[in-house]
Structures are given as C-alpha cells and as structure tokens.
Image (cartoon, rainbow, N blue to C red):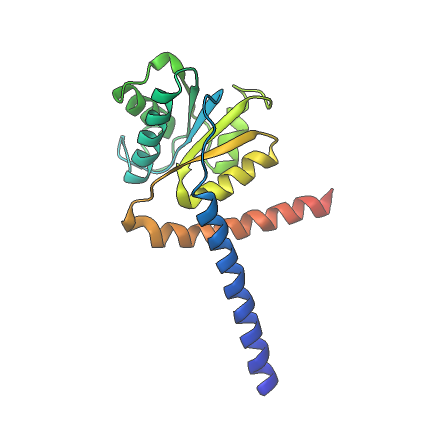
Length: 194
C-alpha cells in the first residue's frame, strides 16, 4: 500500500511540475515583443458575439489596429472562418472592426476558411511566402502555442500579445494547457511516423 501511495504521489508531483512548466512557457511568451515593420500581421480569430467581436477578439483587434497605425507598410491578414454557431465569419468581423478603428481596407486581407490555429497559418500562407516577416496577434494565453505552430510551418514569426479579459483567464488558461498537451502529442506522433 505504501508503494502505491508513493507511486501516486510521484505521478501527481510530475504532473504538477509539467503543468507549472507549461504555465511558465505561456507566461513568458505572453510578454513577447513584436518586431517593427513586419511584412504581415496575422490576427487570429476566435468566437464571436452574434456579428460582433467577443471581448477576447476585441482585445486582439484593438492590439492589431494600434500596431498597424504605427507600422503603415504592414499588411493585415484577418484569419478566421465561420463556426457552426456563428452567423458571419470571424475574418469579416475582424476586417470591419479594423476599418472602424481607422485602418485602410486596402491593407486588410481576409482568410475565412480556417477553423483552428493550425489552419489560420496554413491558409494565410496562400497570401504570403515563408520568407516574409510575420507578426501574429492573439491573447496572451494563446501566444506560445500559436507561435510554435507558425514556426513548425517555417514562418518567420514574432508574437504581439493582446490582453485576456479577467473573466476568461481561468477558463482559457486551463483549456490552453490541454491544447498544448494535444499539440505536443500530435507533434510526437508526426515525428514518430516520419
């Protein structure tokens, strides 16, 4: 019985250390500093509120707009499809919101096919080449995984963290731990089959 208890204690400690390491990666990446004058700025979509941005998406959009105003040669890619429970695409809402914030429509490309982070980058590659400098805008909790996926695809990317509204922090950080574990497992599977 003592051996079983000891084994369980060791496993729980290992899991705790693993998730603590994940948290440190997320937090450190969430302090990332974007390069100036990037060729492209990809704004990752997320859930809408009807035909309006959710508070999470609004933070991404306002962060993107500020960057675009300071870097007038950067082209924006609004990336996000239309979820099953959404009446419009996330990309169209991002574009309209950027225009309302004073960004010229001619600077905004819409990518409306993606349904997850990997696809955001895969479909955005239709508009850019891998040698382009790219800044990705997403909420702090999501930046580590987003940048990791973009780098896996060969993109020269830096992150631009948007704030995470306090009411979403526990829920989305917890979900992100699980999403990162899934990402690692998928990566291991791909490497093991090559």
